[in-house]
Length: 401
Ligand code: HEC
Ligand code: HEC
Ligand code: HEC
Ligand code: HEC
Ligand code: HEC
Image 1 (cartoon, rainbow, N blue to C red):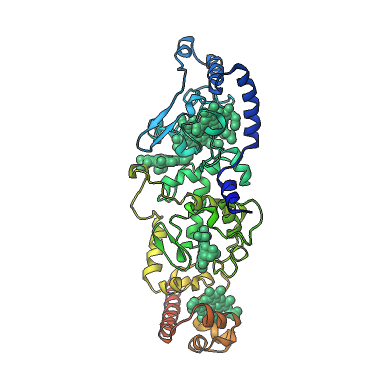
Image 2 (image 1 turned 90 degrees about the vertical axis):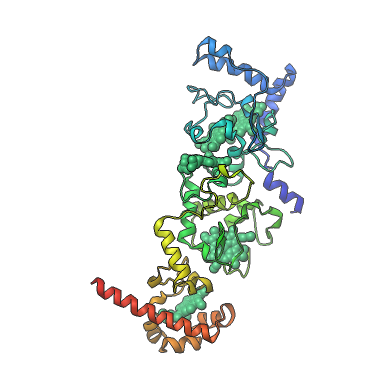
């Protein structure tokens, strides 16, 4: 596919349903030669009359309606058509007339301070259906709803919105109403992605930093080994499934992620972008990434203690080390807590002999000679750490008995 085509397919997703719908409305409207929103506004009066008194109905404003949010530099005219948003009792009406679901969201995000597009995407100032929903050329934020969800193969269309929620809520460990993002944040800890990637300003450097991965343009991904509909979201899905298939030779491990895990992580990746929002819109801004207490003490221990060696060198990708609370995302190799004894059984070598001459193990001789090259000094450090860890672990086991 050509470059310009990639850009368009990712960012401007045409809703076939939308087009059809527009064609029908267009036909109706052109006949009357009035803008489509006038049609919706006159319909809305009939619908509102079902739940409200005549006086209230007579006060429904007509003409273009808008919410201007100066701080966010947005003018959202969605309410020109979506007039029922703040009307209780219209929950079951069709769009654009229905009451907004989960009205309690507006307690935390008052409409006059947030508008609509900051959560939904779309083109705020437009008042025709196609442009307002952002399905137009050069508009990079289409409405995150049904049409995009079907292109991304996500059946729960509300999941997409979470990407926008997390642009602001990224520093929170967990946020109500964001099941996919919350799950992805669990996985980041569980799989210790931060061992290889800088995430929210902190982490290892084996892989590229991910602070702004959501801004990476589809044009800048490598599509050579990718098949299917080209979008950044879909690239992440396939890369998480089988990193080495998309980027041959990568050391990013296959982590046995299920479809939902990969979708959640891809949504999280798309949300890590810098929108230049005023800081009052970002809960927890400039605090360190928030972690659960047990996660942050574990992480401190890993980054500061003896376990740091195995994170920095990337050994944790394949080895868990119980003694340091390190859990490998792949567990391809044995737990190194027991290496001191195990090498004798497995390779008939002391740990020291094995580390200086790993030829008995095909895997480790390749790793020590080509992937992770240790100086002699580091080898001694490794032997000391593993010896100490083994002794202390056994001592603790005995004490606990
Ligand atoms: C010209 C009138 C019009 C304007 C302006 C408009 N909408 Fe809509 N909207 C509609 C109609 C009609 C539907 C129902 C058809 C459909 O689902 O696409 C709808 C449906 C929706 C849906 C449900 C879509 C889905 O996939 O289930 C959302 C969400 C939405 N609009 C949000 C917005 C937002 C946010 C804005 C402002 C950026 C906006 N709309 C502006 C007419 C409008
Ligand atoms: C704080 C974020 C947020 C803001 C601000 C917000 N919404 Fe929503 N909106 C949501 C969520 C979450 C849903 C529920 C999505 C779902 O469950 O499908 C929703 C649902 C909707 C739906 C129904 C979609 C459907 O599939 O039926 C419409 C229409 C809509 N919003 C329009 C608006 C309009 C118009 C505004 C501005 C006045 C607005 N929203 C402001 C978060 C927001
Ligand atoms: C433009 C930034 C922004 C967006 C987008 C946004 N929020 Fe918020 N949200 C905030 C701020 C700021 C607060 C207030 C936090 C506080 O008072 O500490 C808040 C509060 C909340 C709260 C209650 C307090 C908390 O932090 O748990 C929930 C729940 C929440 N948001 C969920 C959502 C969901 C779900 C979405 C997407 C549908 C969303 N938010 C979109 C900025 C945003
Ligand atoms: C052993 C180290 C390692 C681990 C663990 C790891 N990655 Fe990676 N990751 C890499 C390397 C190296 C690359 C660059 C090559 C590639 O794209 O595969 C990369 C690439 C990426 C990219 C693409 C970045 C870009 O700019 O193209 C994303 C996104 C990513 N990783 C996310 C994750 C997430 C999320 C996790 C945890 C679930 C994770 N990684 C675990 C090493 C790692
Ligand atoms: C790509 C995966 C991978 C990486 C990365 C890796 N190892 Fe290994 N390692 C293995 C496997 C698999 C074995 C089991 C030996 C075998 O089957 O050949 C092993 C075995 C070992 C053993 C022997 C353990 C025993 O109980 O017998 C030691 C010690 C060891 N590795 C240390 C390291 C250190 C230190 C690092 C980081 C500098 C590291 N490994 C990185 C896969 C890996």
